[in-house]
Amino acid sequence: MTNQIDALEVAQIQLEKAANKMNLDPNIFAQLKEPERVLTVSIPVKMDDGTVKVFTGFRSQYNTARGPAKGGVRYHPDVSLEEVKALSAWMTWKCAIAEIPYGGAKGGIICNPKELSEGELERLSRRYIYEISPIIGPKKDIPAPDVYTTPEIMGWYIDTYNKLTGEASFSTITGKPLELWGSKGRGEATARGLSYTVEVAAKELSINPSEATAVIQGYGNAGSISAKLLHEQGYKIIAVSDSKGGAYNPQGIEPVEILNYKTKTGSVKGFSNAEFISNEDLLEIECDVLVPAALEGVITEKNANNIKAKIIAEAANGPTTPGADEILYQKGIFIIPDILANAGGVIVSYFEWVQGLYGYFWSEEKVNSRLKKLMVKAFNEVSRVAGKEKIDNRTAAYIYAVAQVAKAMQARGIWP
Ligand code: NAD
Figure 1 (cartoon, protein in one colour):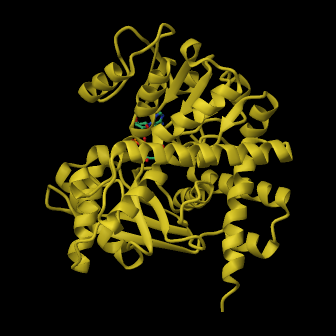
Figure 2: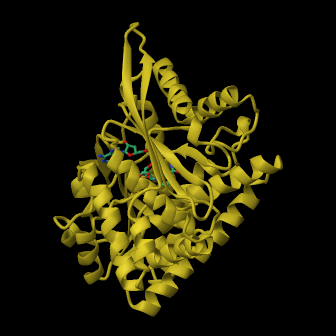
Figure 3: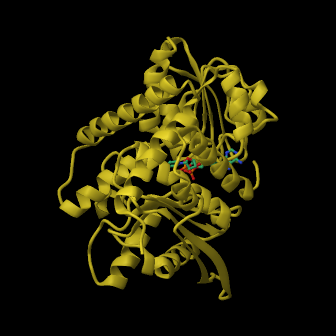
């Protein structure tokens, strides 16, 4: 993994590449290089042993020209302000590509949730929302889950926010449990959206899923459900991994079986009928579809030349560095970039927000069919720009997204 300074640099290099290509107005570019607002908070938490530990948390609101800020909250020891800023930039472009009425945001807390008790995790989560409460709300900024945050944590978030405001509204947080008016289909949405884009890409490349293989790095929400859905499309899942290492079997791994094994043991590592593979080696396996679904900066100039996948579908945010992008493009590898591939999560978060504001809820079939429509449209828009400009998919995705944001900024005019 690269360090977090790199994530922000990566986001800025990607933006600059697109800005140059599209001759973006320099006044707009100047405003798009940094977030509109960032908040750093100290979060005192009473630990189980009676001591108070002070954690650091962030919220970055990147751009709100197209609507309220929107983005998940990450709990991880490597969280930094720079990483949160980068993730909030990517949220901005993602919402624009998906054509949903949001700007971009992201939050994070520097912590290791694996070392916290349930009670400590709850107190940390509630206090974080308390601390960022002045800048969030259904028309301001809407948090959601990201790495190591769950629907249960979203339940604590909405409860804390409701207690603070005296309202029992549900649209300040998405990714909530169904009992608190989460949306049907939200849990699977990121992976489901990705599976729709892989379906279209495979057709374009004449890949027959029932004769094809997939490899998944990261086996949490995005990764494990991507494995399940690609397997349902016909792909043989030949390797998966998590933070402790991977499992590889060229004959195929049953995705739900290995998920059950991970739930029992804490990792996919050690799964029977599979050999151990490191996270580094896993990326270099020959396969049709590679899904990085963990953290950023895993595909770099160092290993890009060794990647043998035909399609890379980026479930994770920022898994590929700009140097690697150049190499992969030259090699003819078809990238479905993060800001397109993983947009399903925020699309169904948007559906959850709409349903909560209306107080009227949709069936899972309706959610999934509307998700498919938006994902396929976004994929086609990106392909159209890539074909017209003869550029890589990531730059095409940026050009499409940045143009939407720039148009909204221009329509608002400069203030004051
Ligand atoms: P998660 O917490 O559910 O799962 C994360 C997984 O990554 C775990 O299996 C963990 O063991 C693994 N992991 C952690 N460090 C690793 C390492 N160094 N090497 C390999 N695996 C490692 O998180 P998630 O929600 O699935 O998020 C994964 C990625 O998808 C992130 O980049 C996130 O930003 C992105 N994403 C998630 C959503 C969503 O709705 N959950 C939406 C869009 C993008």
